[in-house]
Image 1: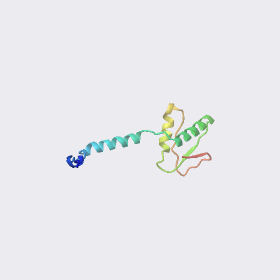
Image 2 (image 1 turned 90 degrees about the vertical axis):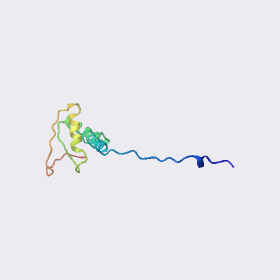
Image 3 (image 1 turned 90 degrees about the horizontal axis):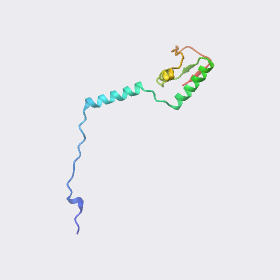
Image 4 (image 1 turned 135 degrees about the vertical axis):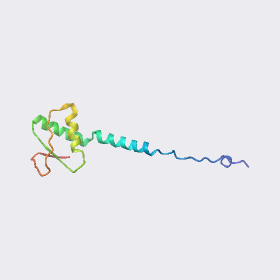
Length: 104
């Protein structure tokens, strides 16, 4: 009978690479900084920018409302910085109202 190749092969043990905790923490900080400082364009942001363009052409103002931490301020800052468009950005009190609003 032929001998099986598995029977004569020696077993190998693979060890996980040693993790450098400081290097790992530095990488986490780097990734968080990228997410905090970068703007990732989405379809929703494109809709918002089109709406802002319309308001700018009509020389009107609008109000953007929505839940916290969805990107309203970041998208607004990005729009303002893009091509250095001439516009004003004002943070309104939450109790203020406007007839023309955009839910973001």
